[in-house]
Length: 347
Length: 146
View 1: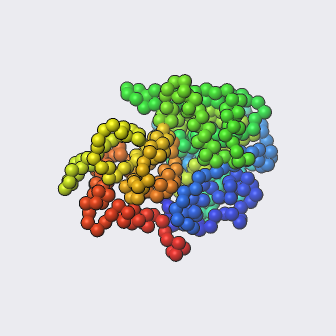
View 2 (view 1 turned 120 degrees about the horizontal axis):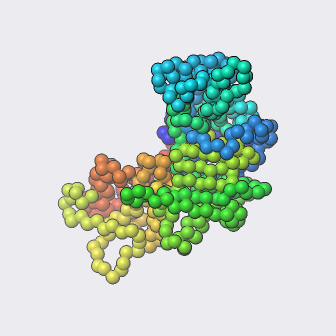
View 3 (view 1 turned 120 degrees about the vertical axis):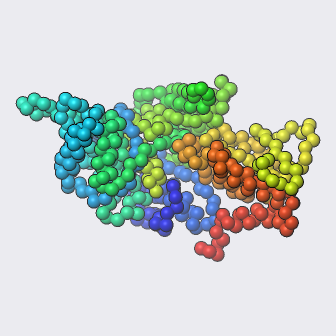
């Protein structure tokens, strides 16, 4: 990320809604806080703190059935720059335009995955309630469905590809753009890569935006592991698992470490001191405990290898920018962190 | 570094950690550069441990930190601010260099040799402490500027 001259001077402390304060300490995301600290005093790097995802109130307004299809699916993550002159009132129009675009590309022989023998239909729809604060723009969904050939059948076809755009607690980005732009920095796609590329091309041409694959480095994966382990769960449906990659020739070696979720939670509780928050020290301690336990048994320093995947009952994430959200309760919390990473990549 | 032209005899000693074995006689150490690989938490912990074995006198300009791997953000498991904080705590300069890149390596080697020459007292008029305060003042804006 580059220090841009356009970054606003003040952090949104005064203007932030209470919802925003629920997520960030001091109502300012990590990167902005660091920048403001850098400007105010001599450079003393401050460690980040984040709030443990809670069941946000907005979450309760979201119909769990409506978002159920978002869970238990693997999404590939991208960051997206603000969309120019995008309008929520034109969703039907966009559906038609994108359908036509895909059909045209199919003619040219580019849209191979979509299927030769059936027509497809594109649907744009709003995802209500998928936001952190009221300021966040509405999330929306794009789906490619196969159209049934038989005229008598009115049923919707099979969903071939899904992509959704959202912005959860995106204040730091929202402040920097003018009204012509719609900020939905986080894009999640499920389905064939060729379709993602097609849709991406259309969006880039139509709204002058830019998609960029969002990788998640080991540092952020450690944070996610800690934050998701910290989430209160009534019951656990999955083991807590970590995957490390050891670079060695000829092929890299993968080390997998599974922990019973209740043990992971117990470990977290033993290092956790600040109520409601997660600090860098706690994340480091949590991971260090896992590393030293492993070292005691196997004499391998996991800290010298690269963490590539974390999996908990809340969600699982892979360094290549793949995410699977398992728990509806913390959907917003997970998306909030991802939005933060997306914004960081854009800026 | 050894490829650089230097009037005196330049010796580089590489060590995985400190303290160095005490049963060997070695020439005076003029500069210690701690290399932290941002891709490896182990590397950071190792450096943190090793720092405890360094005599306080070295921290008057004869210690530097070199962080490598910042270029590949996706592989980082240590946040650059963590290293920055470490360097700040020990009042020593922090340099970033992707050691995997040939060009950067060569430039950094040059820089380190210059630093070493000053720390060894081979540059008249500039001491290690002078250099330290020069490097520090460029990092932190003085309070009067605010």
